[in-house]
Image (cartoon, rainbow, N blue to C red; front, side, top):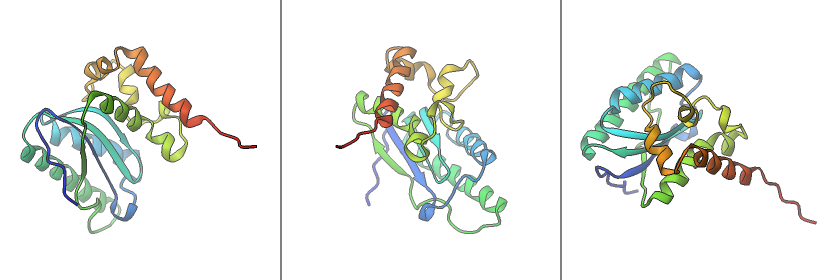
Length: 183
């Protein structure tokens, strides 16, 4: 599989999962550590618009702020750092993540907005959890005054305002909740 070339000032869906679908986050502390390492290694190299950490995979919506080589190295350092700590914690050896992190270049603003909603609704897709209460997604960062690495204002502006941001998420969630009966 040929990997998408990363270009400065472009938006990407970055994601990966545990090798063979294995768990990569066993607990909240693992997820917090991953987010800490994400900030440490990628600060100033990418802007983050959304994220979600599930037990066996993660999603990031980002814009590159620097050249591909720097960003790729930053992600490599992040994943290596996290995998070493995780493996040590659970007395495990070997690769934790699939070989290369996946990346899809976002072609337009419509796709970017749809992806942000998709990433935030990931807990609903996988575990039928209420995305509004899921701790390890960036969704609630948009309602907080706490400092965050999320591009809060720019993301809300994509949707027009916070009310429309909420509306778009709830509309998609409602579609997922619909049940169809056939007589």
